Image (tube, rainbow, N blue to C red; front, side, top):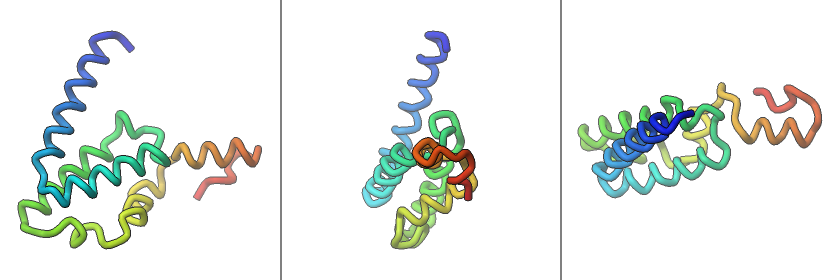
Length: 108
């Protein structure tokens, strides 16, 4: 990864976070909690993948429609997050495999 890639990545991340800051406050709170959750257990392709930008797109549409964030995702934010990454390899899966010593034991 070259310096230009790093600079471009930072520009994209700042633009992404500007979109988050433009959301209504309740959406921002839920997004930040989801982001923390994904960074903790998240899919291995989280930094480069479409997940976080897709959530912002979804939230922008919901806010434009006048819906509350919990109307979109339900009351269990963690369950919503788990459903989004259910078919993606996660760091939690990799950790579970390393602890058990058996490849594929954490697959769903």
